Amino acid sequence: LVQPAFHPRRFEEYGRTIVSIVRQLIDSWASSVDRDGFVEIDADRVMTSLTLRIICKTLFATDSADSAQGIAEAVAVLSEVAFNEMQAPAIVPAWWPTSFHRRKRAAIRLLDDYVWKIIRDRRAEGRDHGDLLSMLLASVDEEGDGGSLDDRQVRAESMTLMLAGHDTTAAALDWIWFSLGRFPDVAKRCQTEIDSVLKGRDATVADLPQLKYLEATIRETLRMYPPAIGVFLRQATADVEMAGYRIPRSSLVGLSSFVTQRDPRWFPDPARFDPERFLPPRFDSIPAGAYFPFGMGPRVCIGQAFAMTELLLVVSTVLQRFDVALKDPNQDPGMFAHMALRPRDRVLLKFCRRAN
Image (cartoon, rainbow, N blue to C red; front, side, top):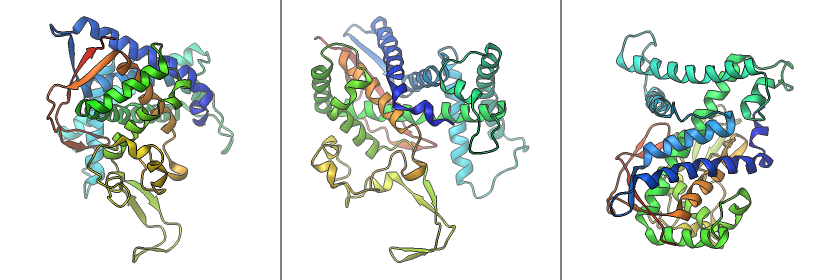
């Protein structure tokens, strides 16, 4: 039911929306520059707000600008809650009066209020906006009983896509900007490519296949810092032996992208940031299954192409107009993992408008 929203023919319009939102952001920086011409931002706070606006506008035809901070805080709470509950040996009953449960309920209530309002307004309006939400409201389950989704099912699908569609993308942008700030030679090479392809105009989806080095830089960032850090689970459909271990049928097997993508067998000198791993001819030598930041197989992330399109358009639009640097060039922010892998410490970025 959701797949048509991610059809490539829709990406051209998504692309225009993404670039427009990013342009609004960087235009706002012009009024915030300091005496030296820099604007300083907190990467995580700004990127979370940006990706939330993008997912709400592209898939739900609504603007989250007024609610972005509250939504971001609620998502952070639920990310922590989900991670802790998945790791816990036993779950404390939901009715138990703990501060943990109070924070969880408050976060769910805030997100529910936001999503339910969109659904109620759209039902009352009765107009097809051509977006994901319109598809869900008008959908018919042709593989099931032929019925339509009720509003609670629409709410569940909308919530999942809103949260998954911005949280991991924001985390990816945190690490991309950290990497570009840490390696200015990589950032400069990306800018040279962007200038050559775009020649001063706004990026479009049609331009993205030509931004090969920028894409390789993003893929290398996703290798070192895979945002969807939660273990990908797969279930054995038959008894199988792997590396001398017997895995009984129905067992769950956890696959860690973070561990696999830093294995020196597949990625020599894995701690070194090297975008050329993802350019020919080296890219062709990466074995299948060694790199899976979006998962793999039939259950691969439905939004994989959307996420890569968004990352390419956001980074190319910013780098076209700004140089980026870390406030502390020697910073090692560390990592922490909830539902997404994020920097443990704040990453402060300095953007300066390019002279040319």
